Image 1 (cartoon, rainbow, N blue to C red):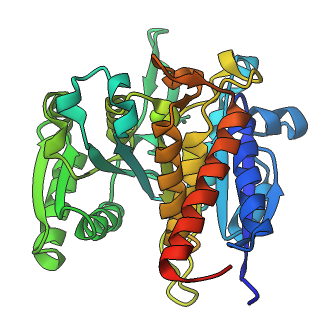
Image 2: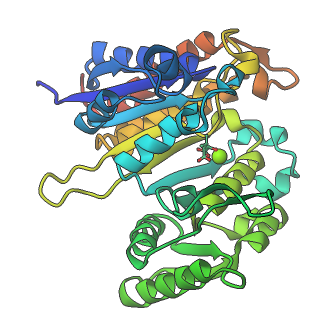
Length: 382
Ligand code: IPM
Ligand code: MG
């Protein structure tokens, strides 16, 4: 049987980005070689790496390649080396441009506690055991992109920095739809977070989400929460949440907080999705670990590649219609952790510390076993 070949654009970026991405390439090539799927991988530059080569953090050619691919995998951007570049072309601007140009308005950030890592959380095991939260963060609006913005000099010589928090009805509605749809496949519970008590954009956010819920999603339980209260509730009783939908800035903060419930930023994947094209059924999408470029440990084989690998699993699920392989990779990650193998960030007593590349290899070995077992169970052959 010939398989559809999936075109994936790899943008490893800076710091530990390339190390995590190398393990994804290894995994994708292994899946291709064993005919579980077929991938056409292309690699390009983003962030500081692109600034060094082209003077900008992402080129128009790279954006065009991202649009032409079935999905984009991104590593991480930034580092002290580029601290002094012009603000408009800083490494992060490349990431923000990709999000904006591809209109990736829905950012899915799951926070899942793996049993094997429960001791790594700073919270008590009974508070976080079995935790499975999905944060849906709006990604192309709000204060990240609002105009006017800038730093101006006032008549008295003082400077004034300003940004604009802005949301339109349609921007709120489309991201809330994604959250409700995903909640429908989970525990059917959505918490919408804003600061309606302080900001008009938050008041509108609450109105639009309430209206959409009444109109289309009667089967989903909706509650509203001020974002500061949500930050507190995430620590007090995280199990009360299933899907949280929120704006760009609150989502940035709450997702970092939620990630720490799980004990390691090194484990958390994310997906950034655009709208589904009505004619082709396709959507632009980019997958990236939640962690940053961690320049302090870059190039030493210390990085945990699992967040990037689990982002690739999300890519298989949301862009390539291969939920079967995504499930198998997620299971393999659990099995590797259960076997006691650990990169330094999640190292614990009685475990074995291994390198980035060894973790990638261990994952493939575990995957081989779980794919073999699931094939035998279904009686299929490759
Ligand atoms: C994230 C990061 C980015 C953001 C930075 C690197 C621009 O913190 O993806 O959460 O603020 O969105
Ligand atoms: Mg962030």
